[in-house]
Image (cartoon, rainbow, N blue to C red; front, side):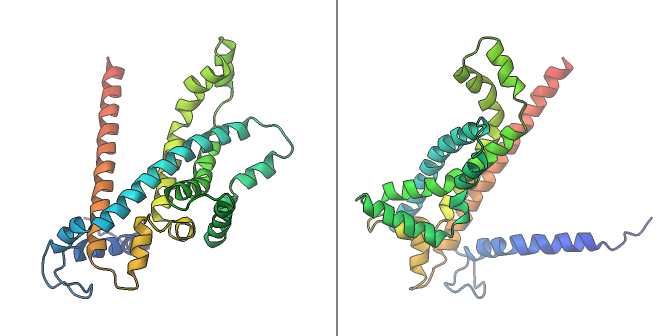
Length: 267
């Protein structure tokens, strides 16, 4: 038998995975810790999960964050997709400048963008709350979807849509039947990234938030002054579990699709 040689690449990969996932494992483990202090594991307990489900303010903040993330991603998907399609069809000399302007919210520091949005909403006399949060999150979510869709359109053969137009399809029908199905994976991946950014945002939300609305990141941030309890670990563990279940469901669906495709191919 040949002895396996020591691999520096394997060691490096192990270190990378440890740095990435060890903090997640620690959060999951200490969500079941009996002690309030995340210093040592004193015993198994579910009391922090019970405290989480009894904390109406935390659950309300989570609900607001989820609604805000879904709403801003839905608006961003429409605006970003239409913007990317429009930019791909422009032949103006200023097209490059317009593309740079479209991703400005990503390049501007969050604290500056938050102050600008706050001043803009104040000038319009908009009441600070869920509406301003929705508009603000949509502003910085649009570029994520726009860049993903624009990259997908750059690699797509324009002859496909032209062939549909030659066969009598209108511009909208050619887009709906040909272009949209091809760019949907890019829209979906960009929307997932935008949702993660919306769910994680603290800086911009603090500037444009109202006194009666609280999102989960703001709730956690304000608890730092009094001490963050292991309820946050329990909440993170539950959210991680939901994400893993969603990924597992997606993998099972893709596997079933491949099996059906293979059966039809053999037939």
